[in-house]
Image (cartoon, rainbow over all chains, first blue to last red; front, side, top):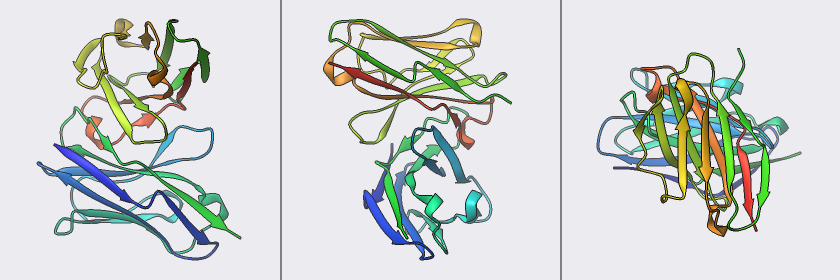
Length: 114
Length: 115
């Protein structure tokens, strides 16, 4: 069984400030972990993923996330927020099989203030 | 390459009516998934096709939902009869065989409103 908890349904930061979106997961098997982003009126876009290997993964638009097995966390960060980062972000976990049935968190809406 | 296409983008129907949602995956993607987001909550898995076969339909809410994937290409999701609680955003996603666990390409979703 798998589950994902995203801490904070809404996060607000100032432009140029650090972005930190929190994600904790549980999984009975080694997980694959993902962050997706949804901009208004668009579909979900894969931001980054952890499968195996390096635990710090870099994604598009300057985002990165670190897989911490001991903390069962996969927090998403960006050093400096841009107005264009305003969107809804989803953390997801899936088992490392082709089935790829993912379990998603509730989502976190990021607001960037000028 | 063309992305995952879903239509309609919005549908408003009355309780008891039938609605059919369509998804065209990326050409060559054997894996096709349907997910649903209800009332701004988490995105929940509905089912997974590998080519034309249903690999996992454990997330289908009840027998009012019927999914098909003709010839392993496009897929339809029919809701008959629709109930108020079926309102939400229905997402389709696809991936290549063997890559299902490595992340999907999603469509823009169909927003279904049952009144």
